[in-house]
Image (cartoon, rainbow over all chains, first blue to last red; front, top):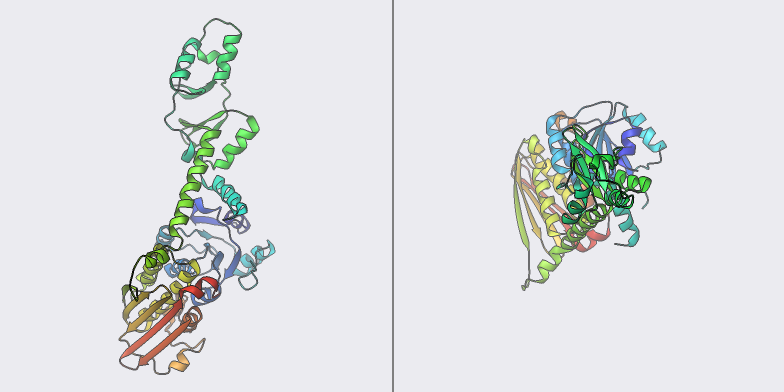
Length: 118
Length: 312
């Protein structure tokens, strides 16, 4: 699924990476614990999270994640935005809470990281 | 790369590339008052088959060699271009993705489209099917070149060196309590390994392990240093600090065991998964610690195995 489909499904605002919406997302990881993201999120994942600090972008960078979407309308701080721009990692903000966001994407056919098969 | 993925690449590119990236911006324009009899010379001199007609208000129309031939065939008297041009011009915006241009060429069957600015509607350039093909080929060539040069660069580099043992060494100094810059060393290491052309999965494992170790240096040890040794078969990441040390290593290695303060947990770390993650990324890990003296962590990641196995 393309990032621009996710933008539509989650009624999201794109904060960083308007030109990167053709990026392909294969699965989703919904998580606020970055150590868990580092341990089970696969590359080519979208990260849904409620945390907005720069370490979230660092985590995405290290784990080769495709994009980050902040749930429940949380706007990231400027440092987070700057780092994402620097690393070309798209940032989205959806007004929808975590559980519903996961549900909508799952319903649209995106698998979780543990069930994704190549 | 097989043919299927190449097609996908082109499909991807027509969405990624903008009209302005491939259009010609040094456009030859004519004025509406230019007589038709002059058009032939202009087209021949500039080796073009059509031109936008521009007056002081911007784009007024478009005139092509077809219009000229029709005018010749009808043996009419000379007249200004404005009488023979197409004035209901189909245009493209400079910031539109290339796919819109491809669709418009298909839909209208025209040879060229004028490209205008979305804001001020001024003429920015002109685009033909040839420009689209040329733009796509150039982009594919650049990507292909990048891929070629990236691939296995380090392996070739090592092959060119005659020695019984070869290693590259990098050191990163990590400041303690500096949460703003946490992860910077791992980020620099990751970029460096990328330039060396190592396999992405190997780089990912090294990056994740180093990042967790770097966070530990910042959270628990008031900083330290990361030393990395890259050899043809293996990468060793040595993380050392002179911090308080770990009283019970066995406990520290248990998933979920943590002594992290709340402020660390609020940042999404400190859940007692760090050493566990490092160990999952590593082929071999060695942790030594003395209370009051500091901690030494060695992470070994095999280059050969790394390419084949995904940790997660």
